[in-house]
Image (cartoon, rainbow, N blue to C red; front, side, top):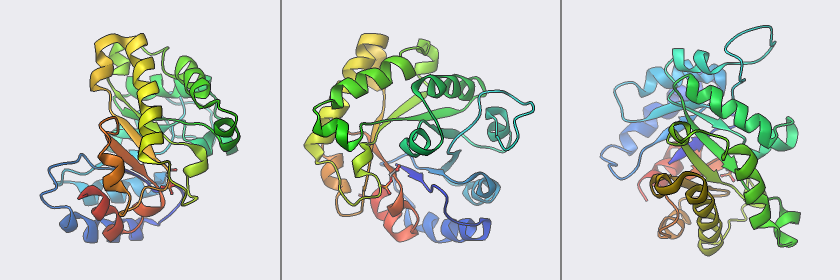
Length: 243
Ligand code: PGA
């Protein structure tokens, strides 16, 4: 269960979240939990999570190790402060910040080289779903953004299927719709990476809430969730973790 806090919370609010959240998920052996926070909150999150099973990640990185790239953060920097994860290719980055399948691949390779695990996001826009292009979009995003990984790199990624029309809209894909898309992704993974596709974890993301998580997780193809809005509140995210 991964939280994507997007551009929310200060370091003080981050510490307060963990103080409330950690006791709420004590004994939740069922799920691995990761919190992906804004860069400036990562030190507070890592300090607060230390000694717990919760891991921490960034939401983006640049592919160079260092250099004259004003405003950017690299994989080795995230690793050095104790991150285990980084999200790559979120649809908001694709929509608003020029992310493409090609830059997703570069970022993913750089993150893995730095020793991070990647939550790699794919998913179709509303117009694409309505035009019956969901599968074609997944093929394209997988082909250009994932199939270029080596088998070793592939073992370090989790894929998040996030239909763009379901993100932040309160409109969730039905468990059947999500499972069908996950099946397509697992098929693409099997074609490119063989048996390693069986252990690939595929998360669903898009308006996951405490009251719909169980029906999504009941689908065999859905291995977890990437949660935005409902991850900001400790009570709500703990209910999702403890589903
Ligand atoms: P949401 O966001 O849960 O607020 O829909 C999910 C995401 O963008 O990862």
